[in-house]
Amino acid sequence: MIQIYCLNTKTTKEFQEGMTLLEILSEFDFERPYPIVSAKVNNVSQGLKFRVYNSRDVEFIDLTHHTARLVYFRSLGFLLYKATQDLFPGSKLSMEHPISKGFYCRVKKSDGKILDSNDIAALRVRMRAIVADDIQFHRHEARIEEAISMFSKLGQEDKVKLLETSGKAYTDYYTLDNTTDYYYGRLVPSTGYLSIWDIESYRDGILMRIPDRDHPDRLAETHDQPKTFEVFSESLRWNEIMGLSTVGDVNHACQNGMARELVQVAEALQEKKIVQIAEEINRRYYSENPVRLVLITGPSSSGKTTFCSRVSIQLKACGLKPISFSTDDYFVNRVDTPKLPDGTYDFDNFETVDHAALERDLIALLKGEEIEVPEYNFVTGVREYNGKKLQLKEGCVLLLEGIHALNPLLTNQIPEPTKFRIFISTLTSTALDDHNTIPTDDNRLLRRIVRDYNKGAFSARQTISQWASVRNAEEKWINPYQENADVMFNSAYLLEFAVMRNHAESILATVPHNCPEYTEAHRLLRFLHYFTPVPDSEIPATSMLRQFIGGSSFM
Image (cartoon, rainbow, N blue to C red; front, side, top):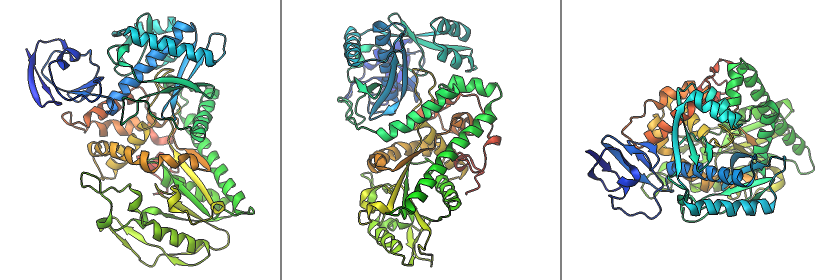
């Protein structure tokens, strides 16, 4: 007999060895507002079919948990793939990226045509039928050579390349009825669990709609994001031209000695975009309605600081005189900071910034007046005036950086033609393979973990524990305004995970196994192992990555 401690009930019960989590779940009674789709065993994500042979701590989780949502999304991807193969044999499915509160996918039929509205309607019907049949997902284990041979015969070269460069001796794969696929994490037990989803036509592909994060019994409300979609598309077009659509492609290129060239190309692409942005600001500065205020924002660890420095250099090359400062210097005194329901300070709240004082100073600056600007003392938590003065003279443009910079309430008294808005995103366009997308938050989380640890600010465990509240604040205060930007800049880096692996692995290994944060640390460690490591010796001091791994010439 083994003992299972259930974190949901905080009770222990005895079970026979080898029982599945699904069987164990039936013996524990606790409130379940939403269906249980996954579990954590000793803080490691597992599917409900996982068999337990030793005493363990178990937490059963629903779709309000990030870990369970990843399990659900992977399973939806397999459902879609199964249906496309049933209806359109020989077609190719590409699960490309999240967009509009869902996932954008492309399906090309064997004749090269994309799906029309009738095809999508038929696909929805077939997917519903598979869900109604409640077909089991089966997990298998095979030697890596056997798996490579199997996927090669199936014509899935994306998986062949990924597995060839994985360095593993054995690997898992899954089957759903007569369809075989590979996923880098667990799935739900059967298709009957996949009750909340929909598909609809989107651009030249499909939008897979998913459950709402806070209310997973209903679909997330869609919001069209044409500018975000174009940023993704731009990166994907370049990847396809270079033949680097998947991690397997990138790994092969690095193993063949192309890492240095790929770093140089990635840097050139980012610099080209920054030059274009600076030239557009310069053009508008000398237009009939001159731009005088550049507003720059982006979520945590998107690279705002380095971007501001690099765009300032390019503006100087255009003949302008950029003056930069941050909304952080207008934080209210810490004692006046809004608080979260648990009593901790809500540093991401819009009211954390004294926006009335900031807008008053911006208006004075744009009139050509000299003003004294504050400097926030993060040690004492007090906004101080230490004699720092600013004035916009002829040829000057003001760069204002901060998480609330694009919030209309921050600058609603400033004429629209004088403003130029920039949103910095971090949109990973390379997928593990055609059916395994990379969560767009993973590179920002890894950046933040490495930066916080190296600066001695927070341990990896602390950074991971804060991440959910950081993401919630971004959804509330930053992301709603990204489509208002005049231009979006993607700071994601082609070889980012390959470079970050050398820095992040040892840091993630410091997270104790007996804490909740280990779930995410374990997932990230497994994820990083898919990438052929690339040393950072080729990364220039002006790179976006240097802001996080150290060695930046701007710090």
